[in-house]
Amino acid sequence: MIYTSYFGNWRKHPEGYRKVCIARWAPRQVPIDLMAIELAPSESLLKSAKAHLIDNAQYTIEFNKWLVQLDPVEVGKRYDGCILLCYEKANDFCHRHLVREWLTKAGIDCKEVNSNESLCIKSED
Image (cartoon, rainbow, N blue to C red):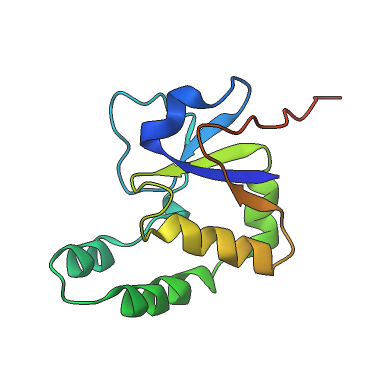
């Protein structure tokens, strides 16, 4: 299982999960275990979105063009048991929701978690 969440929630998640940044830059105060730059939007896509040159629909199209170049099964294996983190809150438009949808469509269990949920810790056998 792969989980997604946002940096502002990181203290509320239980120990035992690797925190993976899927943003281009991680906040200094969040202890990140891994950077997954392959799951981050490009700088040009970010700049276009922040400058309101593209809307969420166009952002989705452009980001999905990037995702189709990746192997979701390999990504799923690499980040199994991890929490993929970026900046936007759970209900805000965010590329991590696109990553979650992409993984789910490929048959990989991926779920957004909120601060009130407990995660099922995977035992290391």
